[in-house]
Length: 477
Image 1 (cartoon, rainbow, N blue to C red):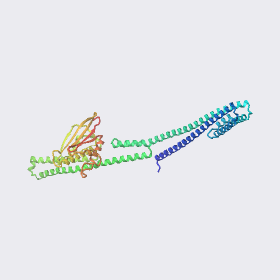
Image 2 (cartoon, one colour; image 1 turned 60 degrees about the vertical axis):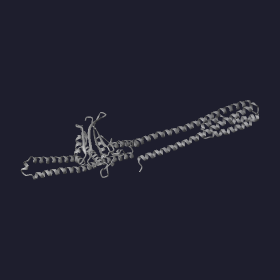
Image 3 (cartoon, rainbow, N blue to C red; image 1 turned 90 degrees about the vertical axis):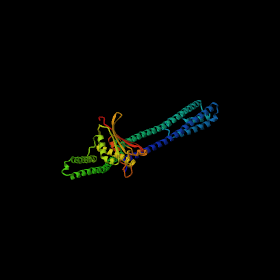
Image 4 (cartoon, rainbow, N blue to C red; image 1 turned 135 degrees about the vertical axis):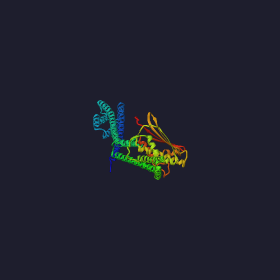
């Protein structure tokens, strides 16, 4: 099925071919006209030269008294008349020029006068008339030569004017067509390319294209569908990553709750085995206090776990960054302790509130802590004093603006320089196939972008890896 764009291009190509064909035809016609008028100009020039010789012969015959040469002169004049008639008969010479010219000359009369002189019957008046007629003929031949040249020049100029006019009209038409194509096709595509680049960099979330032709509108719709699908897939990846992290947390928390529950059970069993006299002892109250404390720990851990997995939480609220870091560390504390990892915290107190989603920020820190734990266990499989994880939060100034800076540093094997450029790509992982999905850092970058921040990694092989997260604060913070 033909589309508007296809029709426009087809009509434009057809128009260009027609214009080129017309210009070619005009150029051929101009070439023929120039050649023909050059031939005519050459013929009139020859006639003028021929007449000059005839007149010289006439003067020479009369002055020198060589009247026997007159018959030859008459024949030359008849030959001149035939050549002149060929030019006058040319269809390219306008009739008004022919009539005017032929009415002003009398070649037959000149031939008759020459025959009288040849027969010695001419009078003085005949010689005077011959002189007058030849002079008039010469003048008219010169004038006719100029007229033919001027007419040829005007004809060529007229054709050139038509060619220039057609070319100018074609250029104007082509410019109009190109302007329409630019507005209806090129401009929307340029806008789409610019906006997709902005979307890729995370600066745009919606495509807004100027109206174009059916093809560009379809392309814009397709791009919007892709963007919508990408956003949907990104949300699914975030949700899947969060659920995976929640699964890992649940396993660790289950171990810790199991340990706490065992303690509660043991304390309860001791209380159950006490005699009435033992219940009056101070140790009885101590055991009850321990049961209550362990139960509160279980409640706290369960509450934090439920908070992490709660999907009903508000997307935007003022967040205490240090409190979120502490909460995630509390959830993972059992895991880090069991791996023999020491956690060093340097959290600057009284940090300004960060607008954002607590669930996403906790997901971000959980990803980073899991990566750091894996790296430390890779370098130090057992207990080692080098298994240290450092978490630092502080306020920094950048060009007069406040930023919250969080760094997570581990002293694991580090990341090779060749892999450092790919760590944020979805699916890329330095972990083994059964230890990672390659989504942790990619999801972390998306979370940081949603909070208008930036994330970067500095790493040195066999020394350290530092993840730097920079959150800009609103001016009123």
